[in-house]
Length: 433
Image (cartoon, rainbow, N blue to C red; front, side, top):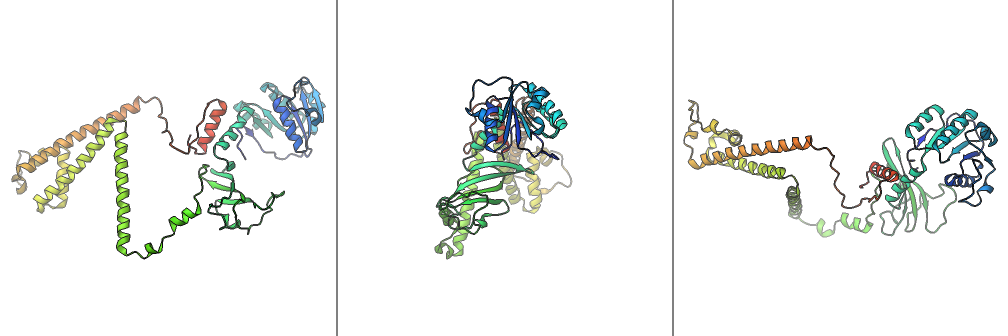
């Protein structure tokens, strides 16, 4: 269920090997643990090592082995003595990647159907071997723990995860609390939906079932029960469930609210809209104030100022010249802001020039001149902002780091090979890091 780190895997196809015999080449720390785990599944295990090991991490390893062959696992004779032709799979877990690769090639010549599991971190070589040998898997033990670290960072409820057709699925084990929204309200079968499927339900009053799917779908979820389910999700971050009492209190209106007059609802909606706009306005100014780009701050403030001046010009022209229409009242301040003072008040007299423009009061012409100066200054600020952006993009050699998360994030200490793999997995799972 956990994606293996740096692994090359091909499924078994067309094999006729049915024997539960396994061969482990290399009885170091990893090899001894492989033998112990295989014996837990009732397998028959053979082993090959160059010398008789002196130190055993697992004391009874020799008693777990069917036979131990001393010799070089790259030699066909040694592999024959370990009955490689009758084995279902062979594990090459020596400390030398060269020995593991050579022994895998020799084993494939002796048994074309055998499963090859090789300890190696050479990605390109592993990919080439998987294409040519088939029924081949390669792992690097030092990086296999990356998935376990990433899974543990997601929370105690997440048992595993997998990716299917670009969508993330996670397996969750959740113990029902008295204030959960499912407690004493839902049947187990009603929890199944288009994005969730219940795998197991264990009641607090019953023992853990020995076989899979031995639970009653019509049972009511109670406090202390344990649910195991798989769900499709965009992110694997687990958030605490909100108590059902708080949810019902937020959703269920009181009788006094239901009987309130219409003006009460209008006032309530207006108040919420006003508060929302006020919050957005404060957030906008706060973001401008905290911006590190001084030119961007000036451009934003100047743009707002120019917009206010344009609205004021529209109002003044509309009030002083009501006969020009709203369209001309909109165009005149815009032309002045773009530096068109000479176009409206030039010394050249046109026969079709409107009469009101000749008799314009001095304060309105002064205001128009101020609009032209403000617009010219704003254009200069825009040029400066564009130049700063282009130069910044030209000389920006390093990519900016993403902002530091405030909450619900994971702190990773150490960027070794395992740490880098853990970071990659957490980023793929959209976990703030």
